[in-house]
Length: 518
Image 1 (cartoon, rainbow, N blue to C red):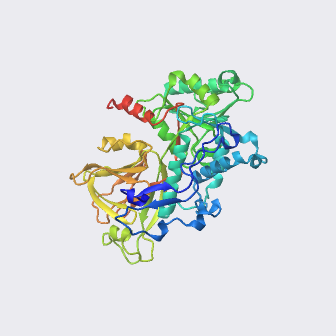
Image 2: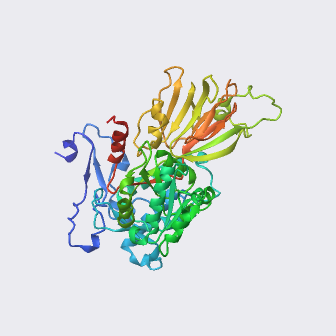
Image 3: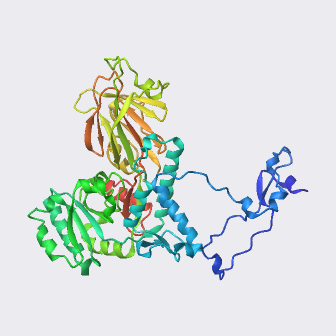
């Protein structure tokens, strides 16, 4: 009986000799992971009752005898993009290659390198050391890899948006398996400047950080400029009492926008709102954020303030685990009055957004935001419910009759989205959540959309009321008939610092602790 007659279904078998076991003492192969199959071609056997075979299923004897390079996957021709996640991943690939070619490091500045050590609780390669830029150096690389004149994510092609989303997922997966050691010198301290209790805590943390003997090094601590002359903070005393090499400086909103690379880490003292404020301040590149719980909620605050000294010592000396959170880019689009048309109610928003293009711009961009939680479009001060059109890419999804619509990230699924009846969503899920707020009928249910989709929520031209839109609860803007908001995955994610060894279970623990529902 031939092998083909014995097979009940399609089977893949190796047509060549099995691979030899790897010698544990072979140092040349120590960093080379075992491959699931050797590089020889595979032969496909079909059952006898289905004799038809494509010619491509036969093994080519000429290819089998050719060099091994012919059997390798062809090199990707993808052009270099302006998304920093790809730059970060390409840097890792170069480092993987350089480990087998040490000469590639001859011209690198070792003083700017950091240890990126696999976490023993999540990685089996505990003896390998991986090197990457410290955040100061990493931020510079990220900034250089982004073209300041590049288009926003809402204008990317489907392939470019998919590449960006895939790169972000790969970055998140890689970082979750490593302990990242940062050379922390410049520290951005964030708190509620109007809360007297938190100001006292902020002073204690600042004083400890400025003490080289206690914190383990010389640091430059940046606090909000409103505390410079605050009587309870006593900035002058802190500045005089700082150890040699340490300094107390003050930040403002403009500094966060112009030079986010100046800070190695953000320490947030407060609740989830303080973490959202950190995301609001850093609209482009965000330094790693280490948050202490001093508020009413704790979905985003991962550390207890009572042990802040030991937490910071461990983070500075042993490293941190990062969770890269998806942010959304939201842009307000204003309807443009056409020549010769005095009234807008004769126009149709659906035709203009998904209909045939007429060669003229119907809308213009106004403001753009990168948000961590949600974009909420609601009826505002009006007592009448809103009529909202929802579009995905180039198709019309539905018309919502409700008090509003909440578009949330997985991180924001525990905020307004949950209160509106939406689902809880693990932050590792690459989705966008859309939930109607008090819908008029039950025909519209909460939905999950892929993060590769460009969502548009707009006001019909014949709307009776003007809805309002807010971004992470800030900057409420009134929308006029014909206006809409685009929502898409942002090129600038939010890196949150987790306790060492924390993984996917950290989110489950926070949900169970905060909501008492699991």
